[in-house]
Length: 154
Image 1 (cartoon, rainbow, N blue to C red):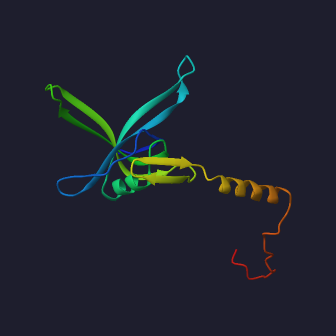
Image 2: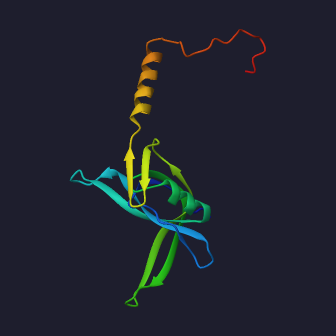
Image 3: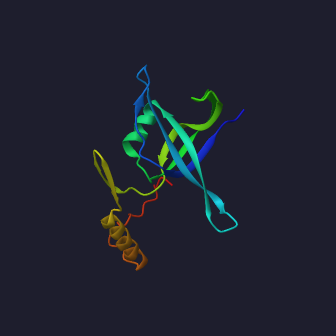
């Protein structure tokens, strides 16, 4: 049997860490995952997938991820039944995350108690572009010449 899911999408809200009565860390969050095709009207179709993470994975998610961030989730599909307040039986489908990964370049993030601000690190972008320009122009001043030796390990 195989029950494996891999998703990439954006967090719809900031994850919040909770603990069970046995002090086990847990968080649940929703990923907005775009479908690879559009509707007949040309509109993008997005699925909202519920994710649950436990223990160290939950702590990791709550510490490093925030609303709008692109993340990749590996896990398994879980279904469960419950009865709502009106007594109607409901069925829930969710992904139980085994690991969660960063899926976009690092950003400068300022976290204060009630506010998270994201800024792309412009100096890194500028530095990267400058490096690309140096190499594309044939400038090799940052490279070191390797002495010729017959005992190279490859």
